[in-house]
Amino acid sequence: MKNKNIVIFISLLAFFIVSLSACKSEKNSKIENAELNQVTNGGTLQSRGSYKLKDGTLQIFKELQTVKDINQDPSDLIISDNEREEIIKLLDNELSEEDKQTDQNELFQTYEKEIKKAYVQVDKKKEKTVIYADDYKKEFTWLDDQGNRLVDSNKIEYSFTKE
Image 1 (tube, helix red, strand yellow):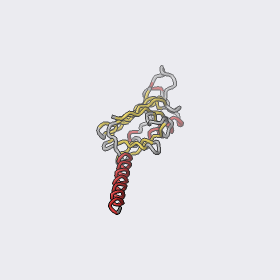
Image 2: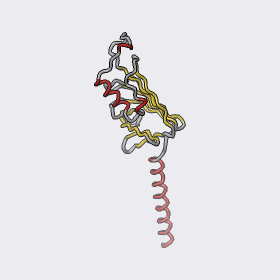
Image 3: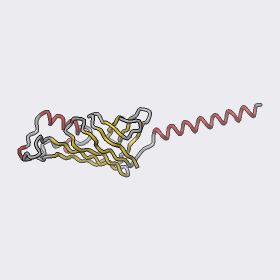
Image 4: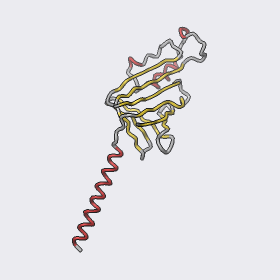
């Protein structure tokens, strides 16, 4: 009887340890190859955007459209104070101050940045997907049950795929 209790105890202990390690490894798994592509702009000036993570290197791309008339001469483009504030908000925590040049005289203003040592973590319990790097964090909330459709703090929606 005593041996039977010891076997049951050891079996339960082993099961518990395996269960805990499985939960921990799923929660802390780092994805180094993934892609987020903009689907909707959430009513913002951002017309295109993507986050491409390949082998730990993150490429951020954002394209903003401040022009109301596509036939407008870019040299005549004047950005209002409200548009400038929105651009800064859209680029805040994404780009350095020198990368945030809000006075581009183009029909579409483009912004790009590369970040090394980046990764994505998917938290199924909280239904969030987060991109991390040394001095960078970008959080997305799930819009569907699988985490394939995400939204950021600016209400811009993205599709999410991982390799």
